Amino acid sequence: MIKRISVLALTVASAACSTGESAPVAAFQTASAQRGDLRITAEATGTVEPIRTVEVKSKAGGEILEMLVDVGDEVQPGTLLARVDPRDVQNRFDQAEADLEVARASHENARAQFERNQQLLEAGVITQQEFESSNLQWANAQASLTRAQTNFELAELQLADVTIRAPLAGTILTRNVEEGSVIQSASGNVSGGTALFTMAELSSMRVRTLVDETDLGDLKAGMSASVTVEAFPERTFRGAVEKIEPQAVVQSNVTMFPVIISLDNSSGLLKSGMNAEVEILIDQATDALLIPNNTVVTMQDAPAAAAALGLGADIIDVQALRASLPSANGAAGQAGGQAGGGAARLDSLRARVERGEISQDSVRALMAGMRAAGGVQRSAAPADPAQPRPAVVFVMGAQGAPQPRAVMIALNDWDNTQVVSGLEEGEEITVIGAAQLQAAQAAQLQQMRDRMGGGGPFPGGGRR
Image 1 (cartoon, helix red, strand yellow):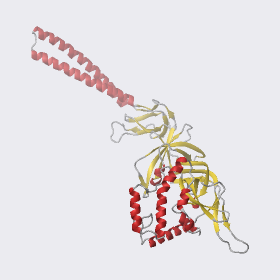
Image 2 (image 1 turned 90 degrees about the horizontal axis):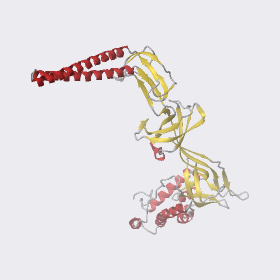
Image 3 (image 1 turned 120 degrees about the vertical axis):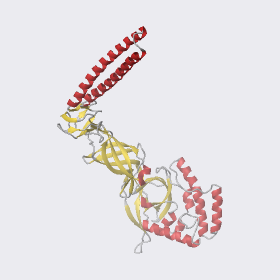
Image 4 (image 1 turned 90 degrees about the vertical axis):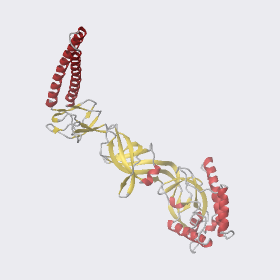
């Protein structure tokens, strides 16, 4: 699952305004904006495994005479690993060699006979039928020689197969048989034969993890990853996301996708089968201005947040807040202004409906015209989570009362949000209780429904 980590020291206090023995006017829980590092990561567990693993089998069957390597030995391509009893294949080789010699002699004899009969046919000594018979004998001799050569080459390969050699450079992971064991041929057995060794190249390893499908959209190939194993808890191995496999795996009714992390194991410390903890870096911000998540709300939720703080929703002028939006840079400010135009029109219509100046049917007609003119667009979250976007915080004023302020925010984790502009380090901002905010939102929604007869064209306003 996605794990979001931030390093931030926050001071939370209570602010109250009182004079003499009179009761406090208001009390707010506050936090200060402070600088820190923000890291957004995806965390998963997996198993260390070699990138390429090979089962070594013998093409020859029989008794194992020698096992020349053991588990953990490093070998090079062609290194002799084991020997199988060669008596059966040696006998077949000797017989094939003898058959080849006979076939060669028969071929020479048939060729000489054919050449003589050809001369005798030209001299008229033999008939055409006798010549054709000798021609057939020579053709049979040629076929016999070809079969003998093929059988000899096959027997020669089988004789070489009794010595098992390493197919690649790597390390012996398992040794499955011992000297004296009788093994089955890999080429002559339907079960695939007996596996003698398992070996792999261990200079590069990978970790196979399973990531929840809800977190998959944040990951892509090439992202850096950190891997730790229980054997070396103080050491971090660096890797990268190699690929995200397309086929899902369902575990306990949860859909997961395999994610492969490639690692450099030139140190040789990582072993096949180790349990690994994987942390994939999605995004980060260093020395960023951070505030707690429960101090920031969206533009749409600003009136409800003000009501939750007991300030009254009428102190919020969303259009004025949008006009005062600070920009993180020129492009972000321009994008924020363009995005705010359509939303400002919606806010204006909402206010007129709440005041009873226009009816629901009139609003629908106006919005239809605005859509036709391209004036209203549905707002969408930026594709890049680091892209600045507008929000509202309530900054403690000189009189001890919170004042709404538009800010630009970017990255956020489970605890904190990065402020790009609009707020200074050390400023006190008001904490907004989640339960109070939800209650205020529900009250505003019900009030709107009551005024509009149970439905409306705005998000959350019932029938559309």
